[in-house]
Image 1 (cartoon, rainbow, N blue to C red):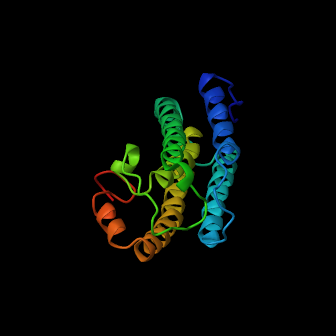
Image 2 (tube, one colour; image 1 turned 90 degrees about the horizontal axis):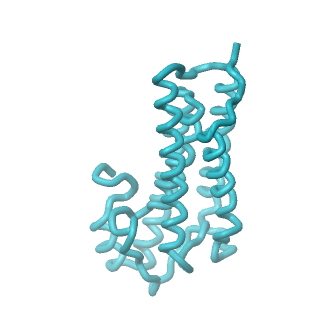
Length: 191
């Protein structure tokens, strides 16, 4: 028999963070309506949706759940990862200011942000999205969904990062190449 949904502090915090994530589209509308990069945008959105649906479906069916102390640790860790992703996204969007866009675009005279998370990473916005999406199955203590989410999100985000970097190199040139060489792409000290 499946345990009933428990409305504890962690669940309330998870729901509040989810509402904040969705509110990103209201608080930070994209600065452009350009259609560049829409293909990879839809791939990312599909990956997020597939991850969420799989996580909820497997969890509701009781498939791949981790229980006991390991499950409690996984749930708490998942919540921390989820919250970290939300903070990472909001902070990065704020640092980008008017340069924030959901389209793939660049201008030759565009300022390259080099403070905050951007002093270490080229794509902290995508790291935040990765943490948010993989935090869901971890919070639900579903390890197969967590593996699926990590793989599908990394693949779709990596495609988008490559598109953006190619465009930035083409449009901004040497200035971007120098900026890029001083930062990890996605994961500090790893990649």
